[in-house]
Image (cartoon, rainbow, N blue to C red; front, side, top):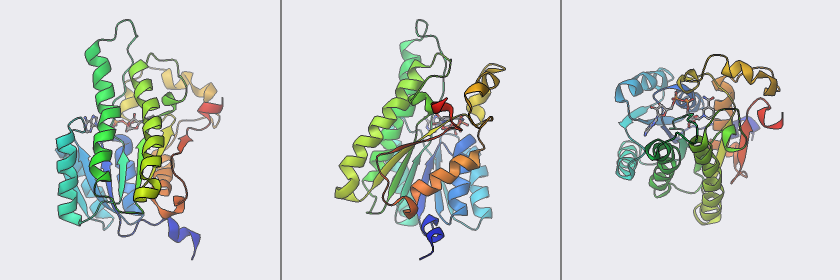
Length: 253
Ligand code: NAD
């Protein structure tokens, strides 16, 4: 077999949460490029239609399901809709998330809880819902962050705690579901990629980090999507429980 065949996602059904903007759109498109049909889940159904059009333009099927990942029932309903449409779910990309920067002495309980609720708990509810129907050979890719591994000069206790927790979640589910269910669970720790999330940063913030970007620039979403496709595919068939930094070297600087 040609090794490139291992990277294909032909016939797979991939769920992408938070697929209405930013990196989620790039992940959905990349998985469709690789041959998968895509279930697009996010709160904004109108924006999901744009991503669905991108997937269909590649000749793949797309199902949009308005889903707030904070609600376990909505995650279960999203997976039920996917099963109804496609009959299987093979890959979950836990991408939905929010980024905040609030000084710790000013952060309200509501602000802290909402980040944990979306980034950590939401990933878990989506994972549980998919894990219940996934067959051996399936793959879960959790989107953590370099901020789960290091700091980057912003006050991000909630975000950093949620993204570090995703790394622990990844390890634990990998060991629970590896040999028993044949499901691989990995995480990616992205560095800095220009999206709606990074637009919230103050002017000059990304430039101020350039000293720590060993490759001298922010990332292009397709460079992250390539790692998502690899981890989703059989090319990563012996990789589980890992967190892969795709960060242009930020974590080694
Ligand atoms: P983004 O704001 O463009 O995308 C986040 C997506 O999540 C949006 O579609 C949003 O609607 C969705 N979302 C938020 N709350 C949700 C909820 N409760 N239920 C369902 N969907 C919800 O930002 P992005 O940069 O594309 O971020 C995507 C992921 O990548 C996030 O988990 C983020 O933490 C992570 N990340 C991004 C960067 C970066 O540099 N952009 C770096 C590290 C990690």
